[in-house]
Length: 251
Ligand code: F6R
Image 1 (tube, rainbow, N blue to C red):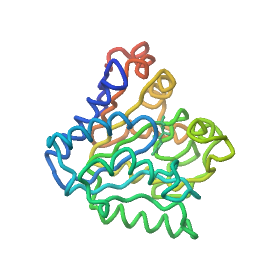
Image 2 (cartoon, rainbow, N blue to C red):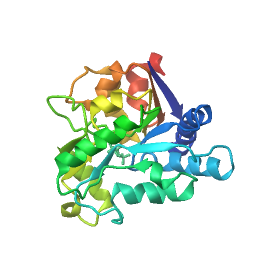
Image 3 (cartoon, protein in one colour):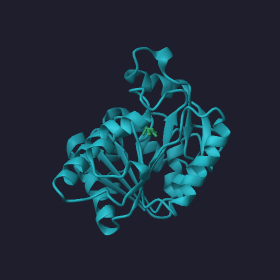
Image 4 (tube, helix red, strand yellow):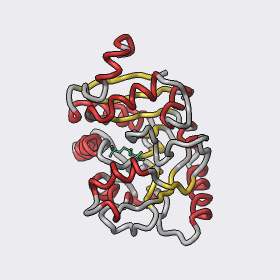
C-alpha cells in the first residue's frame, strides 16, 4: 500500500516524516532503522534531534544500517556519508555509535566489503523502517537505472545524471566519486515499512513515474509498487504536483 502524506513545504512534510519514524521507535525502542543521506532527510533529522533532546524519543537501543557510501572517501571527508550521518544526526542524539553501520568506501576489496555488509544487514534480523530519498533518475540507495534489480549490496558505477546532481556538494564535478557501495533493492524490499521523502519540483516527474508508471529496473523506485508492507511517501506540494495533476484521487 502506498500512502502519500503532503506537507506545504519541505519543513512541514519533514516534521510529518519524523513523526512516522518516531512512531516506529516509540512502538519498538530497539528498532532497526534503515537510514539515508542526501539533502532530502536533513530537515527530518533536525526534527528527530529536537524530539530526542526534548525526551520524546530515545535512540539508546536503536540500531541503524545506512543505504550507501561513496567509494574512495575517508569517513572524515566532509562529503562522505559517514561524515554526513554524524554531522546531521548521530552526534546530536543518544544513539550508541557502535550500533550504527555504513558500508566502507575505503575497502581494498569492494566485493568482500559488499559481502560483509550483507552479513551486517542479515544480523539485524530485519529493518523496521527504511528511509529513502529518490534520485532524479529514480534511483533508491545508489541502485541506478539498469536492466535488473540488484538483490544484495553491490559496487555501483554512478550514472552521469547522479554525478551531475551530486556535484552541487563538491567543489567541482571531477571531485565527485564515480563509484559507491549500495544496499540492494532486494534488501530494501525486505524492510517492514518504507518511508520515502522527496521535495521540490525537481522530484515531481520521477515520483509520478515511480508510483504510477510501469515497474521496471529502468526506474528503480518503481519496484516499491510491489512492496508488501506500507510505503509512506512524505513530500511537499511541489514534489507531489504531477501526481496531483494526473492522479488527484491518490492524494
Ligand atoms: C542517499 C541515497 C540517494 C539519495 C538520492 C536523493 O543515501 O541513497 O538515493 O536519497 O540521491 O538525494 P537528495 O535527497 O540529495 O535529492
